[in-house]
Amino acid sequence: MLNLASIVALTCVLQQVQSVPVTGSTSLSTRDVIPMLPPKGDAEEEKYQPLLDFDTDSCYYTSAIDIGGRTNPGLEPYWGNSLSKCRESSRIHSSHVYSRQRCNNGWCAIMYEYYFEMDHTGFEAFGAGHKHDRENIVIFVKDSQVKRVAPSCHGKYDKASENFLTGGDRAKLVFHKDGLGTHCFRIATKKDDDKVENFTKDWILGSVLGWNHWPSGELKYKMFEAWRSGVAPKLWDWEDAFTKNLRMAAGDKVPGFDPSRDE
Image (cartoon, rainbow, N blue to C red):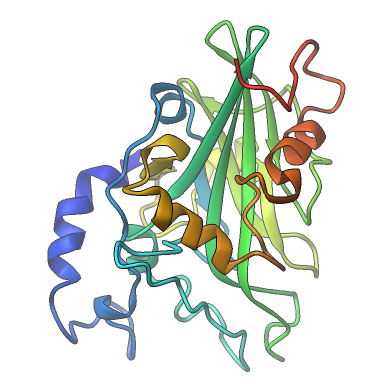
């Protein structure tokens, strides 16, 4: 299991180096990547962060904003191999898992949200898709055990389940292309466990940036404000997004949990 927090210091050094090509790339250098913020989350957010893999036809998640308030410009899907930049290892080496939790009545729901520079369809050779994407995973915990895993897919949580693979306390999920459509998360299978497809060849554990641990409220607000429409973050309270998504993710399988209230 790769813990990306352990390479934050190295990444910060690399981001100061100009025009150093990433291995296997002809055009991308580390200076093109949005630097990550100092990672920190609540104890539960750290403990239950899911383990991820990424199918070979999908982008890696990365950082949405840097310490100076510069937001990620994203990438336009284009003719040919639209993965040539968004699947560079530098993307995930400088990335955050944005998280927020809501706990009441013995339950904790923890949303982990991931920013992607673009999404593309099964017709990527024609540049089909869109700039910027976000998907999230909601983990429901009770009595210190993960009880339900709800991955988002096209704005819904239809594939949420109480049955899932784990690595210790962490559920395993895969970012994949949903048929000929765009990408989303799905719960991992035994087959996925046997053949991990990301560049590390191991399940990835990211650097959590929790709701209560941003460097400043101003910076957090700027990140959310930059994507008020379209692929807006679901972690915030504008138009009650956080509550609405927790309600959808819970369905009728989390008895007693109130998606609108913090204890």
